[in-house]
Length: 208
Ligand code: GAR
Image (cartoon, rainbow, N blue to C red; front, side):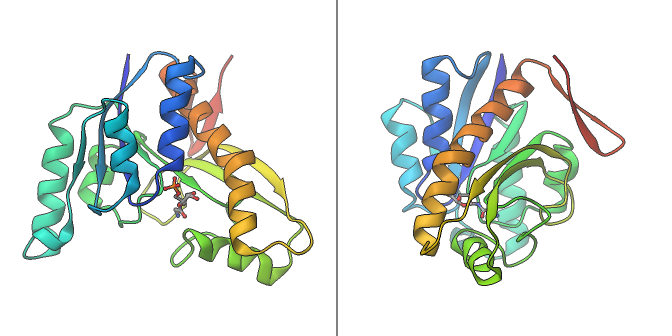
């Protein structure tokens, strides 16, 4: 059984997709041990509680400095002994120690086809703003392992989504979520839970 922690900051629709996929059997061999938010008002925390999942807020606002927050966050995460950490709209820069501790055991969902519209400053609606400003016809989403860089880790799954004429950032965001994010994030967790994902020379290999 793969024990996962899901880290969130906002609405938690990707968390919901994971919960639904576990409940419907689309994700197998997996249990959510804890949901952690840096923001106490995140609706994601309510979603977790509604499904009887432990949900907590660890906010940098409650600490004197960033180093204390980082240390306590990591200690509390470690106490759940999870196999995989899933960043589902978690908008906090991860401390290096956490990335080292969980090497190839942290995954992130990003709302573009990496390496387009990713890196520092590209998160949430800003990603779609960038795509619309450039006039791309195809965008999508990417699930990748997290390394020391921003959105630079090995890519696990990607799915393309069409941009349509007249799209606003909100309309495009919703389409990318529905057609790509909520599909490939649960799929990636299921692949990992069933031992089908390995990283070889910095690239992901998916076996049958
Ligand atoms: C999602 O679109 C996710 O891809 C994005 O934040 C949103 C969270 O929505 N993440 C990033 O931009 C990370 N760079 P949710 O809280 O409804 O799942």
